[in-house]
Length: 88
Image 1 (cartoon, rainbow, N blue to C red):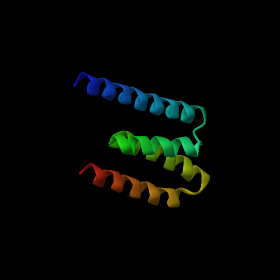
Image 2: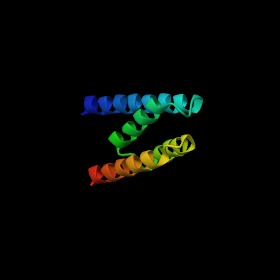
Image 3: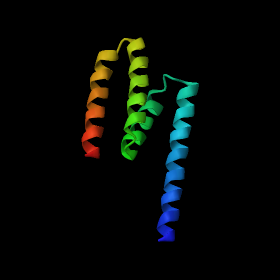
Image 4: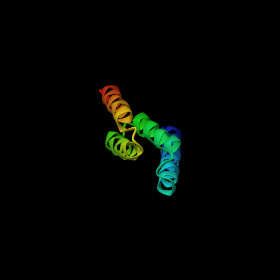
């Protein structure tokens, strides 16, 4: 049991490290699409829907500024719907 708990802690630390690194990459370059998509994926996998919604909102705002907002907003909406379905 303790071994499983240690594995769980290691996994959580790894995930938090990855998310932190991706957030730093986006802070340095908010237009980093790859980091935004990886962060979205990490939040979805972990069931962190509030953070997923914020990440998608930020990404769509950046995309809107570039003039590709409608296409991205449709995809973001689909992503949120999918994530919500996966958690139920």
